[in-house]
Length: 449
Image (cartoon, rainbow, N blue to C red):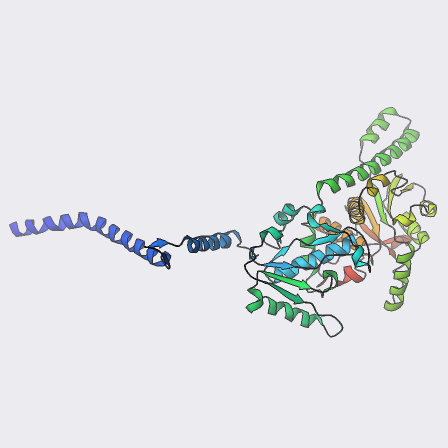
């Protein structure tokens, strides 16, 4: 009995001490393990080389902040983006999607403020962030594509120049294979891959419409340009309210009704009227090559078909987005159906707003004015018209509309170069299931009911 009692005492003491002992052993083991990992190299007597530790921590933070897969330490550089506003938007989106495939950040490209197709030396470069909001783009496109600045470069490796192929032998397949090879191996080790050669608009297209649309959604104009568009839209709506107020006064002869109608929003129609000489030459050649006779439209055809749109109210302002060469052509303002009141920027007395800015910004203002219209009518072979309809299609789809066949559908669009019901223009939505942007860039993508 005494022996048993004496043997229980050390057991009791051992139970009390064992927990603390094992905790100490575990702690010492962890310290030794971390020491072995971190003390990979030494400076003097056992001092940690903090550059290595910083690299480990930086890599950890980069991985945690970049879960979506867009690397921030590898970049893609592309040639200056040129031509018209919407050609530049397509080229920019194509560059973004190329960078996405290579898992790289796209270095902010230079756009072109002027419009010169052949005289490259006369192009006026303009920084992307002078037209579109840089931070807003990265915020909206977070996890999909990413823009970087040249100040982000560490210049730790040389730049790899990737020459884009050209000619008929440079097929879509060869282009894709080049990109795949550039996404791995010694090429991918370079901090910057610089694509040299053709403007990105002329690169082969490898991506579906939905991915282009995702990039376009992230393009938000800087406040300065957006406010200029606000002024134009406000002027259109103000004139529309005045016209409707006068009509209501005549019909009802009631001051109360007139006051109410003058405060109501006045819808307007925007028509992207392509009838300038260089366009007519281009579209005639396009008709001959393609064998399609529904590309060009005369002024008379456009005016007649817009007048036959079902559901357009009266009186309604029709804003004509036209080339400057047509601002002195009075014929575009005559012949319109009773109740449709045409205005272009000169008649609207907002041409001064446009003249303050270079070509690219003028186009961006007109794009905004057209995209905000209650009804938009354009040419389905025009890139400008096609991207506006793409944006409006996305708005409709977010509202739950799968087609534009209903009269009361919001943001309806029409293609005046294709005859629709009642000799009006054909209703138009973008085919979001297209496997490439080919239809928008070079051909008709108008979907009828």
